[in-house]
Length: 362
Ligand code: NAI
Ligand code: MG
Image (cartoon, rainbow, N blue to C red; front, top):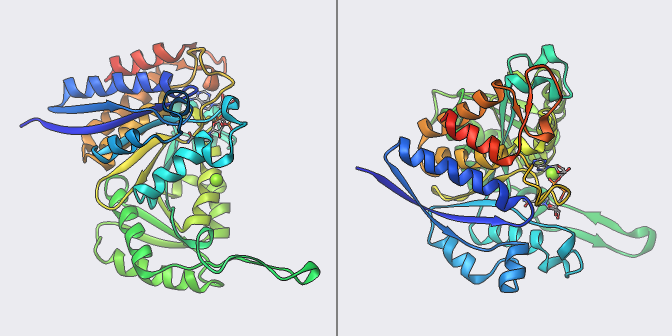
């Protein structure tokens, strides 16, 4: 029996449509190789939404997303729309509402160093030899960024700035399940990050994580204080598989992990809701500096499609095949400008050539 999934395709603006075209070719190839159909509906978002329908997130786009099993998102933003009020600009007007409407509480950001690209990292080659792959699972809708009370009170020198870090048991439980389920599809290790020597929310966090872990006896759990984790990521990143974090710790550690890998053009992300629904997009933005030239790296978008298969459609084998095709093409020496280092065996290619090579490798 052939499976079928509905995908809302939101290319956005800037390099979004250019890299999305290549990700869609990869989905075509997956349809041919596996018994599956991806029913795609295109919709405007960001600058494209503003230009075509007068709004960064048109209602028609929201409706298309609601009727889909997952959202494949490109990127949005750029100088063309900078004079609009902040809430109407492509990024704030589209991304934040999408997170809210669809309850996207879990942010997954893998930091991948491919063996062929260890030279692009800021870490010493012997530390990352053979490559590595760390997945940061970040709680996205709670913690110190959202908890009350917050604000600035009082007058003059008596003013007080207040933030609150608050986590409920259900909030901790659901993000912990996401981390453990992700670990099951990977190397079966979770490192939970907290500051349980200082913060009460972390003491509860650790207790609840321990409880949830009992449901996953096949996955190994360890705990680490966030300050130590920041050090360990640059000292020996290969010790990590899945890193589970509350919102702010995850914000910081996922950026740190991303920068170990070299180029933003390589890094996908997923934002998951309860159940199997998710939104998948490159970690980077619309790259206005290179948009329209056909030279952007499509790999972040292609790996985002791979994450969609892995996390929303449970197609682990196809996702592994896409990741493997990307690795094979890098091993052949193909490089878009952002990862080109002019080393022996490297060949500089454009967006289309990179996409076609990955499809061929599949
Ligand atoms: P950016 O990620 O667009 O670009 C930063 C640098 O990385 C640029 O030099 C760019 O050329 C390069 N880069 C990014 N993706 C690349 C790719 N696939 N291939 C090759 N090079 C790539 O971030 P920036 O410049 O801070 O923001 C540009 C616009 O994007 C802004 O309007 C910003 O608001 C928006 N943005 C949108 C995001 C989204 O759609 N989720 C996320 C981050 C920024
Ligand atoms: Mg950040």
